[in-house]
Length: 312
Image 1 (tube, rainbow, N blue to C red):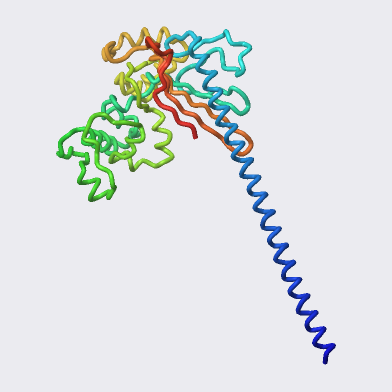
Image 2 (image 1 turned 180 degrees about the horizontal axis):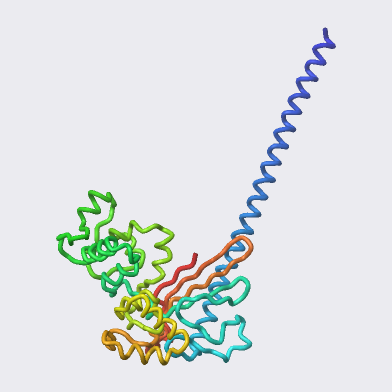
């Protein structure tokens, strides 16, 4: 009987030891997994920080490129920086196209004279850019809703929307501005009609706009769609002009001057020297995008002025 009790106690003690060992092994495995995740997270953060710092470094170098560059109607030229840290092209067309600086770094620059300023652009122009030719009702809705968004009265336009529609039908927790001064491109997205555009399409269309200082429209840079709209051209005429602009800018300017709708007080062929710059830096597992608008028109105190800055 004593032997059986002793064996039972030994078996019980052994089972406890096994449970303890199992728990310890589980704890070790858990700590090992947590350590591995922490290491991976640290590496990821370090990698992200590195791409962000690279983007900022590229921007500082690019500022020097811009300050020492010459420019014409639609481009920048700088052939003096052969030994520069980053291999920027000797010529850059400032219409938003992308340039590869290295395998992991790409840069885009747009003179804002190619874009619509949300603070000044007519509602009809914004509505035209945000709608297709077969979306006439959407175009009317956006144009009238933008007018209602900016005017101070509470009278609803034919296809527009005042506060009551946003509160009762859309059930949103914001009120319309009731002031002409729209404060950002993102604010457009709140407006009736524009809020119904699919996200993917909106993300592309919003690149046609900016918020900043005003500038004259540069016909040497604006998109084919906006060129057709502002010069009252049909598709065939607009495409012909665009092809001419690609091949012979001087002749393009001469032909536009002859058009009856050309208005030298509202449109021209000159850069504003205010640029929207986007720098994309990627690594193996992450990517950083820096977007800024900088005015390079010199003032008494500053060589340039940063209008906006965002790093994601």
